Image 1 (tube, rainbow, N blue to C red):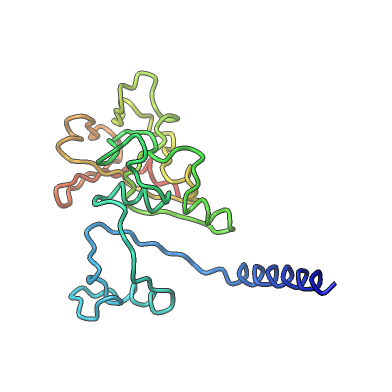
Image 2 (tube, one colour):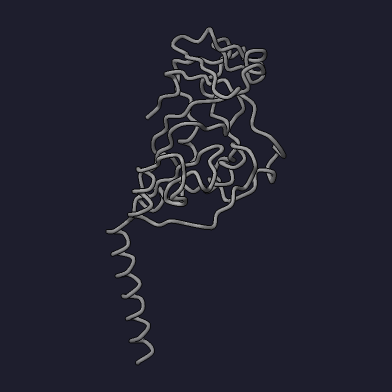
Length: 213
């Protein structure tokens, strides 16, 4: 009888803890930046030459981790590892980044970090650089050749989603590409409303069609 009582109390205790945890569910903010060193952020290095007061405030009122490792040396494979918990080279792409116009790098149905949080009742969102492919198929024109993402190959009156199939409730992302490679392969200047800029040798192409918040 005592064992049954203890077991019942344990179950009740676990249920009570779970209920409290649900009521006090913390916000989760991930800021993933290229070329950011451990000592660049003030909460990790008081002598940093870069003021980061907002990030420092988040750290002060949250949890600060001091042992983390990037799963790859470049951006897209690192984001793949962060979102899936798996090395990117376990997929068909063994090195480098997906090419412009590629379908999603993450396999359909794979559990991701945002998907897991969404299953726990969170609203999830992604903003900024993506670089993990997008679901071009619904907007692809019948005569599209290869991965052409110019207006000749894609109907930009239709939505093109990148993060939503993988657990994000909202997304506002832009594609990025090697400028010389992209201009040669997939010219985008014929897309109405598109804007192009260059940052550090990379070309950035943004279009209202991707603003799917």
